[in-house]
Length: 334
Length: 155
Image (cartoon, rainbow over all chains, first blue to last red; front, side, top):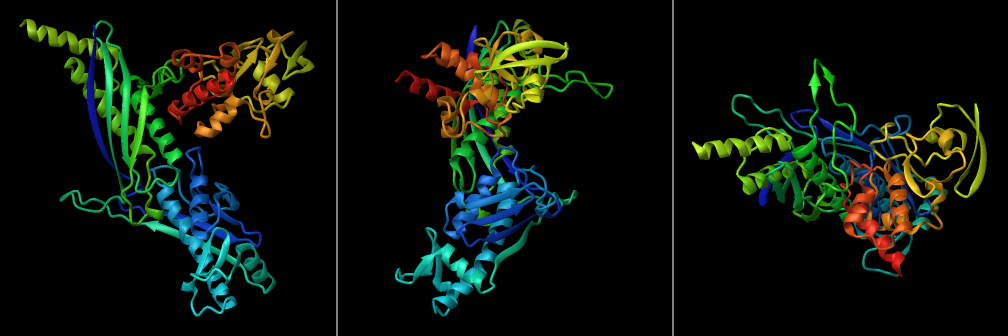
């Protein structure tokens, strides 16, 4: 018999290295005389799209389009260290470093432009749609490229180097007090599953995932990270088990360590909540790891809802579910 | 060494290959077609998928000598920046690429499906793509992209 159930899983997750370890990212920026800018950072884009995020952050701050920004990343010869692409930290930590660096280069450009426009303060200058000009006076503006070009001829350069450090404290083991991480990511997911009581097989039919991302700088990437996380969560909940024997991995192949395929994924509805993280770049924070965490709990709870079997060790293999069902039957017979 | 003749991306080639040489090595090392990726090297992940005589194969499991006389399509033969195949266009449109390592194989599996079946059902798409593993995307956007490409092909 096939039985269906629904489960809920919630998570909160501290992003960044945390626990008192200083989490440092850094970036170099130059604004060029062709109306483009270069961002150099050690942050490695492994496909999650951090380079796109850094381009977007720089573009937003400079009033340019993201294709006007060239991001060089992950080259230890040329780019400043930005830590590992881990701990759900690149959008927040390196994003902050990029934003700081862009703002620093921009600030010298604004000072120069204020002088050129005879504006008493750089506060009165804005960068918008590829132009630099006096706020509220459309007659006094020019393409950003022209301004930087003129400045170059006078020996000015708009370059910067900045770093951003997220600080945390270790947790006091006696009191449990401390500020071990900042910021925290929050998520909630629901899963619907179908359990075959003859075979113990679980099929995930639907997952709805809602995550607080602070601000979705790139909604397509947010959806992609959520779907990727949910699918890893399905693997974590139902399939993946590293079998160790005397320190050796027994199943070091994709034929024996199974991960989800296109046939294992349900319809995934990815939603996000934008509750601005005031310390993040444009209110953003990380999403990478948190996306997979609630999936596991939601699936295990859905299995319980479907057949009344409480799985307490991962993955929830057909064997464990059948054993749970058998124990339940024995309990009833007694 | 064994002499083989094969057609790769519409171009005929005659190659001298080692008896134990795999098709993926012939494509990458002898023809310089680096778009074909080696993932697991044991026929499980599908990253090295190419189309051989109308069938998708794991090019890590095919000996180059076995490809003698066959017609091969690798990712380089599917489309390019200027004129991408409709599957590639759909992948870009929906954001179906993250790290990109599985993408060439995914595109070839999707193309081969659509070449044979212009109106695949969701299940048929799932089955056609299930030999290609992806750890980043959760397949969600990949499956969506194949559906979009299928829709476009119907017009």
